[in-house]
Image 1 (spheres, rainbow, N blue to C red):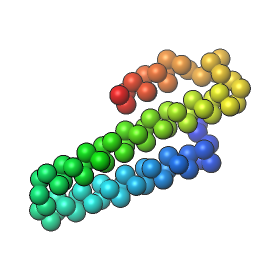
Image 2 (image 1 turned 90 degrees about the horizontal axis):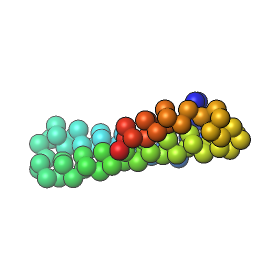
Image 3 (image 1 turned 180 degrees about the vertical axis):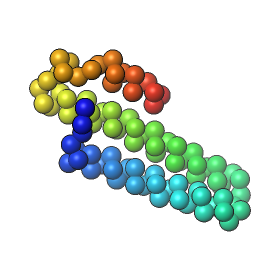
Amino acid sequence: MRLEPTEMHAVINRAKRAHGHLGKVIRMMEEGAECEDMLTQLSAVLKALERTGFQVVATGLEQCMAEGNGRESMDVKKMEKLFLGLA
């Protein structure tokens, strides 16, 4: 299933924010920041990436349903496996 770029705008923005956050974590590591501060920021990056993945799955499901194809054209087991891979 291909997702329409117009439907991915919010997902792309979320991924870009996570990317920027990860850059900050890397800078903190390079500068020798406090361990607790780095781990707090890294935890935020991980959560942002998880949410990005869930949003991709949700967008894919919405797109399939909007196209009116429903379960007939959507590989439900494949989507389930992708979803569970994020959990």
